Length: 146
Ligand SMILES: [Zn+2]
Image (cartoon, rainbow, N blue to C red; front, side, top):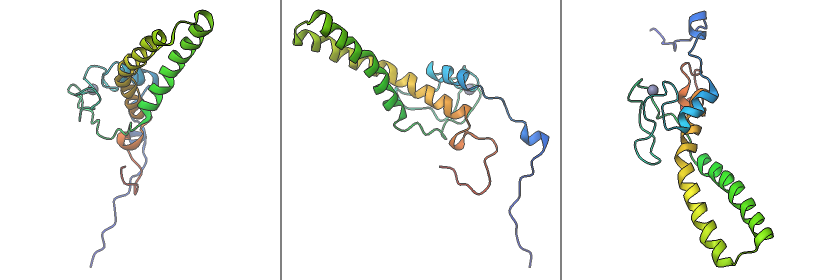
């Protein structure tokens, strides 16, 4: 009776040579809603729905795990814009509360909606560039994809 052994991956110069993934370029491409690898294909098929693969180069986008990180980053970014603005205007001009609320609430909503898709694209681009989750071409043996 013959026993089956799993195929082992042997590191060679060829297997060690993988495509170069520039992190900042991938983040910028994702921020623009483009494929982090080719920069031409669309990353999203809906507002926050990442497409299954790139229409130009065929890169599989399904291994991304952006989860809640884009929302947290948008909260941090918008908070660092709106809160100092509100504090400066309040200390310098002290406008009535109804006027402040009529400016800050829509501003917060518009900034959040405007930044959510680009930030999610940037997170997906970063994950691809850093070979996180299933984006690695040569994943280590024995570790199931998340
Ligand atoms: Zn592509």
